[in-house]
Amino acid sequence: MESLKIGLLGFGTVGKGTYDVLKRNQEEIKRRAGRGIEVTRIAVRDVAKARAGLGDDAARVPVDADSAALVDDPNVDIVVETIGGTGIARELVLRAIRNGKHVVTANKALLAVHGSEIFEAASTRGVMVAFEAAVAGGVPIIKALREGLTANRIQWIAGIINGTTNFILSSMRERGVDFATALADAQRLGYAEADPTFDIEGVDAAHKVTIMSAIAFGVPVQFDRAHVEGISALNSIDIRYAEELGYRIKLLGIARRAASGIELRVHPTLIPSKRLIANVEGAMNAVVVQGDAVGSTLYYGKGAGAEPTASAVVADLVDVTRLHTADPHNRVPHLAFQPESLSDTPILPIDEITSSYYLRLRVADVTGVLANITRILADRDISIEALLQKESEEVGAAGRNETDIVLLTHETVEKNINDAIAKIEALDTVKGAVTRLRMESMN
Image (cartoon, rainbow, N blue to C red; front, side):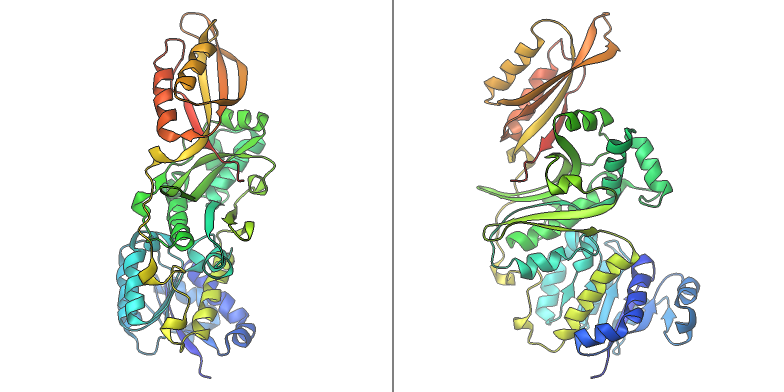
């Protein structure tokens, strides 16, 4: 059969990685797909750099800066979008769909923000949008959720889905350094961008967990409803105290089915150190999925990089090639559930989620402090699971010694813990803001 023709939008890390994997493994890919998959056109801003990256293939593969012409080219069967962002990428993807072309994308921000519009357009036109590479790089979590776990009612997902932040947290724990030092090391080693805001403030992870939540629970993508917290304010002392209490802190993306809606949140989280996901270190990614039939399953691997991400892009290309001529109604729906069967289950406000909590308080080392704090918690039906008191080397303004008190609570509603914290911070004996982190048992 004639090879399917691929148009690459972008030739950066992912674009070039995709080209290299397709070229190196072309015979194996052809055997799997049933026909060849060939890049026949590339559109990129820096044409000279792309041609240099093609080496001997530069004379064979046309490269120009005209992205619109590529998506309009009748000889291109599948458009692979690797340029990123939500502006021009959205326009080009929708234009490709209108032209009847299948799309493969690694763009999590695009799908988290505009996914509903894109998937509806693709369903109407009868084409596929494949996006395995948009979440966790080379880890096949999208296929697992869409196909492998389709018999299950998914109960929750929890994932380490940003390698930059996991590298930073691993460094802070292993070396005892502060956040700024760990970030600088990550940038020096190439794990963090010059502007790391999307990573360290949790936005990247929120894009990814938004996509996973839609597939897991059959709801529209709703990035604007996600609660997002990053790690930039995390103190190394909390990592040390968590370790003493048998926990590790990870930035988790969490999607959970609750009685009154769906929890969708990203934040630093204490996890029992005996859990497998708590021991995922460095820039690696891992996702735990809890299904009612299968129980707990773990997906682990490289979440970024040229070839791990290209692995997912090429896997999508093989899937699209296999189903290229199939009746659209017989394909796996984009979000696993049939479009007309998506649920309107609400995303819960963060005040309504239920969690256990880690609280750290700097207090004056005087009689009655702990009794006042526990009374405030008890008045709101918040029970204490564990307590740690640590001597502080700092001295208060009145010359009295101060101490750190660390409390672990049993589960409670977030609005109750917030109310308790406000009351605790108003006590004269509490020195400064209370540090609050959420906890997950992963049961």
